[in-house]
Length: 432
Length: 168
Image (tube, rainbow over all chains, first blue to last red; front, side, top):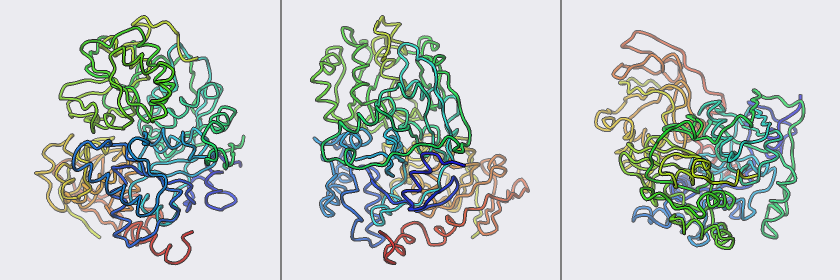
């Protein structure tokens, strides 16, 4: 019996010849990360347990992205705890505001993740890095504190679900739509404790940005990790990272064996997937955007760790260019990194969005979790390219979030209700 | 270890955003967090919960965000143990790592109602509903996780590993 790519990566990290689903292993960590919400708790635990030294300052990343730039006095205090810890322990990969980005966009883009790596992060969307054929998984603050001291993490080797995507996507259908559709198929705990392996010709056709989006949302199906196999696009992405970075200098390529064992195989006919939205209050409430009728909205969020990459903003701009955000709608752009801002400025994307009436934010998770930069009032409704639409996720417990792609979010911003690009007369026909 | 308390019952997919909303995550003070525990799905929880009470929920309890503030808030609110049909994986890890007792027992989770009295025996692995007169076996923990629990959580375990020289 062969092994999955996930089993092979974890076997390497455990220093074992082979590991199999169900085994409990101690895996060597290549990168451990935390943010301004999860790090302060981890630091308190690290220190109260009596640890004085981190295992390897170069393998730890601390990113103040959630409530930063600081949203209030308490948040400023939490951010300071993390900053002081980073200074004390000489953690070089601490990213101050100004260099900071949304962690799951920033860290792969700065070349900190290589194929075959094991990445754990005190943030549930750490599963994003599977897009570069790494194993990555979200954990809590204590696991992160332990990894800082120990350089290892205990893991139960997950079973994998193989998703096979085939067929040509309809116009305006992106990786985001495929993922919302997939979560709709299997449910919010459909991949509980399991790895989601995304395969098939349609995945090979996806851009790296779309692969990041899909892996990012594995957690929304309960998954431990999401992963896409290594190919030419992975190589191109890695080779365009900064010179000397981990992405360009190390990395081991693994692939699933043909006779690898899967918990199940799920086939997805991509041609049948429409532009999709997930209705409140679960990401699994996926329906065709066009089926909703007149759902009026107050706010649109475009960006986040799910859809805050350059291609996402370009897609939004392709719909918003020459159009105006509806007078009753606030449309807020949350770019992933400073580099995304620079690139969007250079190619006219930023200007198109601002001229359409969008507010262009500095990188922050902010509004996605109802922190700042776009909190919803009671009874308000948003369309967002983020990842969660739980009760109260973006503000008041009586507010609502519809999850969507950048295309659908931009069209909704113009229409003032949940809409497809077709409905507002956008005529480019999709991302490919 | 035996816990006996009054049930606060919930359905499936109770996410960590409702267990402790992100707007309160500008602190990691347990007492501050506990003031807002379950606020967005059960505004009365904070005033009605008594030390030793038990949260019971259906599938996928603790899904969503990795915030460890969720088990911290639950524990600090006085809850002695959480019984569910299943737990989301990060919440499961966080509970074991931080010492919040959790029990997987679908039969007990599906039948318990708010206000019932439950007796949970962690050693025997049983959940008894004293109000309904039923008793069920809970799923046992895998040996490694039992070892972590016996150690008092992950950090004491790691401490012994790192100081034992096997940590690199």
